[in-house]
Length: 264
Image (cartoon, rainbow, N blue to C red):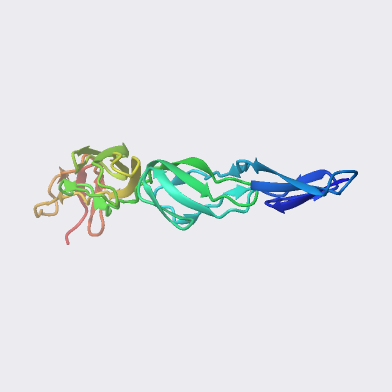
């Protein structure tokens, strides 16, 4: 009768049925009892069990430059330890924590050591780091019509060139110099070009333009009761219609014609 046993390696045997328990070299032994003119005897058989490649799942969502550092995690059907590295792109990694250093495409790699019946394996994950929208600060104080032309300036955490335009309202802009052309609400826009790790961006500023008080010149010479009705004329830097009235005293006014009704 022949019986079988495992001398070494990752396998078990029951009767003549071998069950593999891992990768490596297995040594089996066949032992035969004495029979007839034959003594007992043994013979070994050595064979190799190749490890299978692990199934590693590793994905990383897209991010935006300026996002906080984040951790990554790969899953596998092997229990081998997994280490992470940056293959290419604007990022660094410490352990499983990724820090973004710019915008672009990043390729990370998960590398797993051999364990049990699994050989070492790797899997990469590619994700995109979008450029960050710049933080543009742009404010303009209110003005009064007639104010001199003034300059505006927006600030930003991006170094992209900033240009200015009028979205709406009574004003013009040349470069960064604003000229008021009337009364009302003016909306200015600062537009910044993409630069480095920052995308293009815009920011608006709303300004109220108050009406200027007109400069009205209005004088009337003294008169004597009995003088004929006379006309008055005020001049102004505004084109608004001028009407006349008597605030107090012995006179009436019709249109711009004053009629004296007494002394005083």
